[in-house]
Image (cartoon, rainbow, N blue to C red):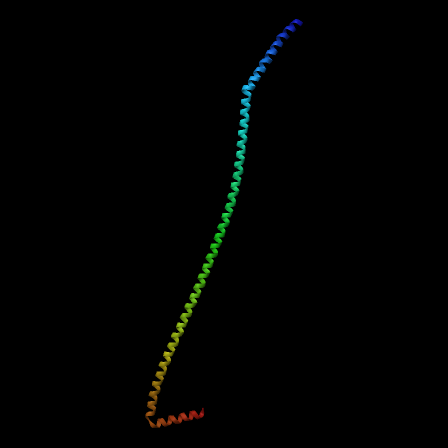
Length: 169
């Protein structure tokens, strides 16, 4: 049995040695020819994924920055629009007020001019009426006096009446 065991062991040891030697050679060949390129490809893929993730992160940060800039630009544009609208409204109100003031001043001038013209026409008409009344009064007085002084007795009666009025006053 010892011999059998020794024969099997020798046979098995040779098999183990040749198997180990084949494994080591295969391992060295695989390591030299397959593992390095496979590991290199895996590392390259990892670097590519990391750079893609970094680029995505950078793009995300850039988008956030651009969004923030756009919002601030929109706020500025809205504020500027509101300021322009406010200035336009103030200018419009100022122009309306100036137009009103100018129109009122022109209206007041026209009214004053018309009043002066009316006063002048009124004074001229009054003077004309006075002239006509005085002319008529003189004509009437002349006619009355001619009639009254045509008769000597009426002249004496008128003089005596006038003298009585003068003494009474």
